[in-house]
Length: 77
Image (cartoon, rainbow, N blue to C red; front, side):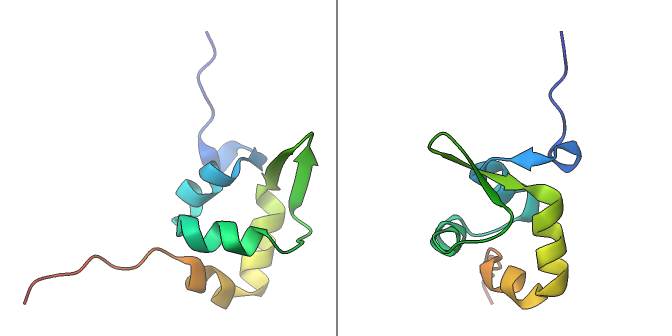
């Protein structure tokens, strides 16, 4: 039986896998995906993310990734 690949080794990710791999906010990422991007491919009605292209995009525009990151947990003082 084949073992599932880790997300870092996969070339194509689903939006949910992308959120987990990069630690992004689900709400912000799905809103961001509504705009056209060069790293999104469509298979029938499903969106798939080209991981290497998205990583290049985040290297070029690091503030976009920072804006979509999950917030820090609150700490009691």
